[in-house]
Image (cartoon, rainbow, N blue to C red):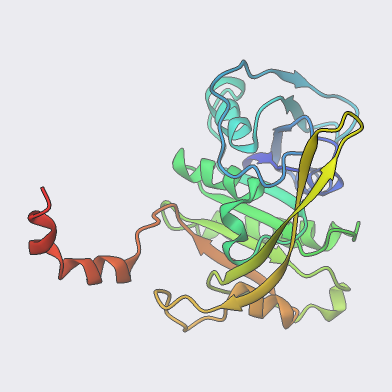
Length: 265
C-alpha cells in the first residue's frame, strides 16, 4: 500500500522512525512528511500567515522511505503532502507513533490525531497511533501492531469519514491482553498556570495541571468500554472517530425549542 505518515513529535522522533521503517520492511511504499520540530498539542491548526517550507531528509529512515521535514503543523504536513509533494494520493494516512497517550478528550488537542483527521477530511482512511508513556522508548510492539492493522485494513477498509485512534499500553508485549474496540472517554484536568519572572523582570506562565477525573458521555452508547478504562486493563484500544461534533442530545433537546427560537429573529 501507498502510506503517508506524519506526527507531532517531529521528524527525528523515535516513534515515527520505528513505524515507518517497520512498514517499509513489510513491503509498503512509505512517505514521511512531518514537522521539523516538536509540535505537540497544536490541535488542528493550519499555517496561513507565513510560508510553509519542506526539506527532504536523508540517512535517518529506511533507505526506501521518502522523508520531508516541514515547517508547519501536523495538519499542514498532511495537506502539503497530498496536494504538493506526492505524485498520487496515498491509500492510507498514518500518524505517530506518538510519545504519550491520546485518550478521551485529549484528542481535541492532539496534533497526532489532527494529522490523521486531516487525512479523513481529504477523503483518505487514516489511523493515529500512540504509546501510552512519555518515558518509554520501546515502540516496536506498537509498530508491529500497526503493521498487522494495516494488513487487516487492506481486506476490510475503514468506514467512510472514519479514523481509528489507537493507543498501545507501554508494557511488555506478553502483558498486553489483546486489542478491543472502544469509545472515546471524557477526561477533565485541573489547569495550573505557574507564574514566573524572566531575567529582565517580565512575567511569563507555564501551563501544567493534573488529571481530575474520567467521566461518562451520556451521548455515546456504552456497549463498548471507554479507551481510558480499557488502557487501564492493559488492552490496545481502537477508537473510531469522525469530525462531526454534533451533540445528539443537544439536537433532541433543542428540537423542543423550535418555536421559541423562531421568535428570536
